[in-house]
Image 1 (cartoon, rainbow over the protein chains, first blue to last red):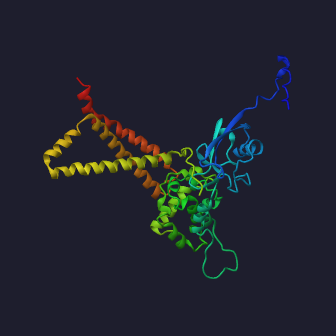
Image 2: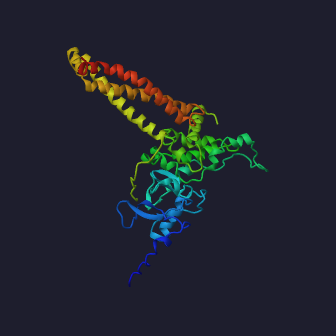
Image 3: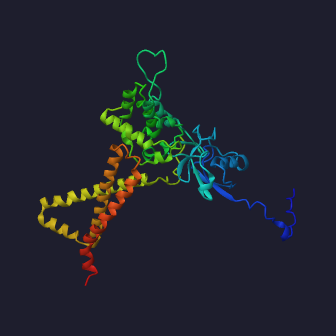
Length: 256
Length: 129
């Protein structure tokens, strides 16, 4: 098979009319890859990707998977920052690939799996320890006594008390940005505390005591060192460190 | 279980680096206290040895280390106040970054004269007329 030859160069004058699109700009995705079937250690691989200022990083990752290397593995689902599947470490910080624009990230973008959870393959980590901590805080309404025959009423002020922490999508960007969590996987982590906060401060819920007991544990809220990495990482803009501080104060002063 | 990749350093912001500095200064202060308890305890062993050991402290290297110690204690103390406010003041978490900059400003304002007076002796001894 012969390789098709490039067409003869056009005369200089005709070559580039004023309206022609500018030369396509390329960027490089440097992805931390790991295939448990072949690799003993993760390694970096680079992929050239055409740059489009309106692209999200997820579009660039899809370009790699669909055009350059189909074996690249990552989670994504809704692509609109709601499902929380594609949290990853982008240029050193945790972000959702579907929310962050390629535009502000420079010519070489470093992409790694989130830290502190075991890597399964490429950008996919085992989320089980994360969800285990989530389940431990009993993230559902607990109420005793008779079921009411109508809705459980709540004032706007009572609802506003925990509004911030209802926004969590369980992407694990906060928990895996936490230096305490990296070094001590048994720490409940910011996400579990955020979801406990959502019920502890809900006037309709009666399980606060049980949850507080769980969070008063050695691996509970007191592990928090207020590094604010979680607050910076949250794609939903939840003030995570503030929520943790509120649970700490509630534990100290028994006021919730 | 799959290996945890080390990867790059997490690029945390002010909050993370102030925590790192707090840890480092804390450990340094702990080690200083260890040495300090030992040298002070020497006076019970023999006042002469104690004097000899303390004479060793009069060299310029130790002088610079003393300035570093004052800096470490000062940062740790100021940042400790900031963390206390983050923990107990309802608006503390929202103003943590501003509080860090104020803390660093106070640090510089106090450290410049402190370093000047502490190093003056060494300077005049080695570079003075």
